[in-house]
Length: 241
Image 1 (cartoon, one colour):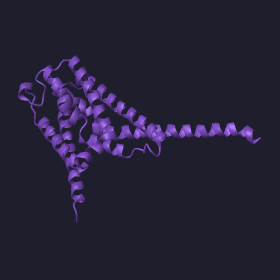
Image 2 (cartoon, helix red, strand yellow; image 1 turned 90 degrees about the horizontal axis):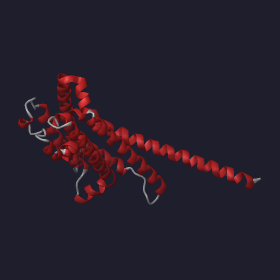
Image 3 (cartoon, rainbow, N blue to C red; image 1 turned 135 degrees about the vertical axis):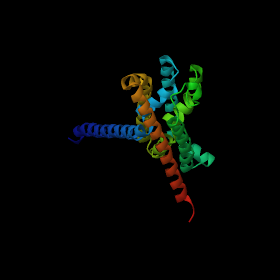
Image 4 (cartoon, rainbow, N blue to C red; image 1 turned 45 degrees about the vertical axis):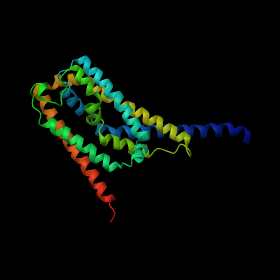
């Protein structure tokens, strides 16, 4: 009797483990995606991307959107899996990264907020040609406008909470797969938003696009100030009393 029940018990245990693993995958995926989406802000970034690439053709925007998505995935993956080790190697703290990155974002937002609708030659933040647009693919379009210090800091924080490979290899492997899929999903969202940014502009019209670009620039400025404030607050708390 006991021998006949053993296969059934084994199957049930495997089923419970499978359900638990699936729940872990779903939790890790949605937690990662939900943490990164509001910081990346693909829809707001699409309008800024359209403003920077105002003189580019639709085909060039598609190429830039693909490069930004690929570069963003590599940046997020590197930050998540090795960011804490890199910062530790150079002796850089997360608050210092927040302050420096927040300054860059605040300056970018201020320039975009005060930019005029003049031709691109009068605005150094825009691409003057399609060849010049390719030079802007990583900086500033990928980093810091799309994947800024807030995103990098969040990715490093998520990576610091990974299960230990030595003590829980299966759990760590499952968690890493789910996180990688979440990174692919957030970068795919960015690609689609940037690729069809001109369609959004067509729907909003010239005046609506101008208003939303200014609003997005103001939000970028506020995000930069907020990141600087968080960094300064953390630096003050780390001072010896």
